[in-house]
Length: 183
Image (cartoon, rainbow, N blue to C red; front, top):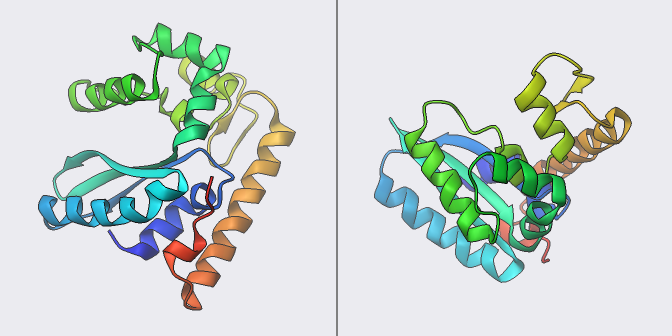
């Protein structure tokens, strides 16, 4: 995974305005990918972020970048806890929730749509997608919106502008480390 892929796919998370980002990229060697992720974690962890491979299949890796404290806050929200409990999670800690998410990604045929909670999506939108899909859908951007469309559109625009700015800074020579906001 290149630093450019990290910027393109996780800029709002690196900037501190989004809880988490999820993306796939190609890899040639699992060993090299794990080494690259350890190197990135050396930059991210001191600033309150973490990057982990959720799944490696047929030359593609599903990468999850997240803000540790913000994920804890998001998963502690009552509606998020209810959704997780209904989906079989023990929501007592981030670690137990991540362990269950890994397990579901490994063992279940269907994608665990509660993953939106791990990305900072509003619980009302995560629940709306899981229960209604197209009924009541108000708009689509970084996620499908079933709740507050106005606020979601503001977030989408903020994420878009952040990504554009980070791509520009990176192309002008700023390092990934220099673009990570601590928190």
